[in-house]
Structure formats: structure tokens, C-alpha cells
Amino acid sequence: MPRNYIRKTEPRWDKAIIKLAINDYINDDYLTNEGRFKNTFTDEQLQALQNYITDIDKRSFGLTKLQCQSSIFNVDEFGISSVPTKLLKVISPTGARRVAKIVSAERGKNITVVLGISATGVYVPPFLIFARKRMDKQLIEGAPPVSVAICNDNGWMTSESFLLYLEHFCKHVKATPENPILLILDNYASHVFLQAIRSCRENNITMLGFPPHTTHRLQPLDVAVFASLKTYYSQAYDTFMVNSQGRAINDRDIRKLFSESYNRAATVGNAIKGFSVCGIEPFNPNIFSDHDFVSTEVTERPLTIEEQPIPESIYNDQLIPGRINEEHPIPGPSRTIENIQPKLPALPVAVRPVSKHKPRAKLPTLEITSSPVKTKLEMKEQQKILNEQKKRERLEKRKLSKKENKIRNRKLRGINNRRKLILSSEESENDEVPNVDTSNEESSYNEECWDKMSSNGVTEDDDFADDPLRK
Image (tube, rainbow, N blue to C red):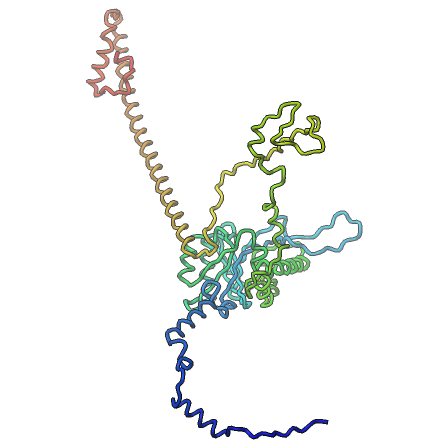
């Protein structure tokens, strides 16, 4: 049963009295400590604190957390062929030794496709590269909407093709100084060159590269989009070959098959899942476990006992037969000379052939549009210009030397022809006078020949110093 408590004492202070006391306290009727009521920060300090919190909230090269989801893009290219690498399963009787499947050709024709996705699931329209000399407008008909197609000699991604793709990319992402774009891509040679860096800087785009040998785990397109896209393309290819047997697939058929597979694979879920699985957005640096780094232990293995260097003092000490070295005893149950086992020589190391091509220089930073990378590429471009200038100078010298040699040879031929004419005239004169004794005129014959050559305009030259006519 609950108890009823009765208050035995009346309150000492009335509410009206308490309010009057508070008003008197506020009106400085009593001594107060003003430090408790002062503003902790000034307006300038509050603004500085707000700016500091904003700077702390920034990440990913100037993008805030809210901007990351719509401003991070991943771009990569892959190839589709008229003969796909993935073939569907074939039904055959049990025990058949050969299971065949019809394909368009023995060797396919490759077409490069460049795709771009964002962390919010936005897809940049595809960019197709055909291996042709001239572009045909019919090749783009039936492709995904707003797609762009170009052509080059081999159908691969080149520096010129990447510049055209950057124009296509900037047209759709519309980067501004207030809303810059972070473009993540691999460090392919066609992506890292001076013109591309200048174009990205002008259009408020920051290019960031992946570390070497990590794109299979860090690139969202490789992880979540390309695999399903190739599978759907193989299915569309198989359906086409079944419905049109005996017909080879051309470029116009490939664009239709790619459009069908792209519409199935290019979903918002695949793009968002790719960024989350790679730990990019939302940012998760601990998404990879120790098991993912097991393959690196091959190059980071510790030295074994056999591979450890032996001190030089052991080599300097000579073992005398019949006696054990006391300074470096050999461990074992019995220290007799019979139990000493000779150390086996190290296994020979295979010598790798030296490559003629120089390895590609590493980038100073993974931020491709940064100043260190730009400076290095500018120095490389200047060195290339200097080398070309030196090459032109060498070619010009060679041309001049060839001209000089031709002029010199022409003069020598003229001199030789004149000398032959003089000698032939002398022989004819000797034939007309049959009874001429020349035994006494051998010493003066050469002088007469040179006198006649000089009278005909032939001058002495150092190249004929060994000529017998001068002697």
C-alpha cells in the first residue's frame, strides 16, 4: 500500500522574492565576475575556426565529402573483338573428343571502347576507336546515345585519341573552379603527356594515377563493370551467330552488339558497387586484409642461413689439416677432422638478358596533373627538341659533305681526263716520228708534260703529290 508523505516544513523563499533577487544580481547590485559572461572568441577567431573546420573536412584534392560522390570519376579503356575471348558453354554428347563452336573468323578485329563512371552511378557516354583510315558516319548509328567514334591506324588508344576523349569528357562532366573533378585512371603512356596535363588544368580536372600493379583491385571499372560487360557481349555475340549462320561480323554489327550489352551492364548499382568495393567512396583504407598482400611476400622474404653473408674473418683463418680452429669452432657432437663437412658452393644465378630498351622512368608522384610531373615532362620535351635539332644538324653536315665530295670528285675527274688527253696527244706525236731516240730525254719528259698541262689550265694540287708525272 503506497504511503502518503506530508510536507512538515514550509519553504523559506517565495518565488517572487527569488525573482527580485535575480534581477538585483543582474542589475549589478552585487559584485559579479564579468569573465564568465564575456565572449570566448572574437568575430575574427570564429571565422578562422570555421575556415579551419572547412579545411579539415576537405579531402580528395580539394573536394568536400558531399562533392566526392558526384565529382570522382574513373576512366579506362578495353577492347572488344569480332571474335570474343569468352565463349558460352556448348552442349555435346558424353565422350566427344572435340567440342566445336562457330565463330565469325579465326582472328578477330579489335575496337577500343573508353568508358567513364562516377561514384554516384553517372556514366559518361562511350568513346569508340575504330581501326580505319577514314571515318564512316554509319558506324555510330545504333550505338548508345550521345556516343562518339573516331578512327586511327591500329584502333588503339594514342595520345591524340586521348586528347579527343578529354574534350568529350569535359563536355559532359562540366567541371568548374567551384566544383572540380577528380579523374582516376591508370598510368598508361598515352595518358601521361604534357598536352593532356595542360588540358586538364585548364578545365579544372585533377588526374590521379593508380600505384603499379593494383588496377585489378583498385579500379572500379575493372572490378564491377568490365567483367559483366564482356559476359553480356559474349551472349549477344552467340545469339547473333546462331541467328545468322555463315555471316562474318563487321564493324556495324559490333556496334549493335556492344550497344545491347552496354545497356545491360551500365547500371547505377554496378558503378556504386565498384567504388565501394575498392574503398574509394565511401573512403575505407582498411578494406584490404593481410591476405591480399600475400603475393608481395615473394619479394620481401627474409634471408635464410645459407644466403646470409659470412664474416671475412672466417675466410682469413686457414684450417690446418688435423687441427680445429679454436677461434671459430664448428658445432657438433664431436670436433674431429673427420666430422667436418665441406661447405657446398652457392648455386649459380641465371643471368637475365639485358634489354635494349630503357625502362620507363617512374613518376615523382601519383597526382599526374601536379607540378612535379608537369616539370619533368617539360624537361623531357625540351630534351627531345634538342635531340631532334642535333639530328637535323648532323644530317645537314652529311649533305654538305656529300656535296663537297661530289664537287671534289668532279674536279678530279676533269683533271684526270685532261691528263689522259695530253698523254694521248704525246703518244700520237711519237707515232708520227718513228725514228726518235728518247733514251736521253727521260729526265725532262715529265717536266714537259706538266708544262703542257699547265698551259691547258691544269694547276698543281696536293692530291697529286704522289703522281709519277711530278717526279
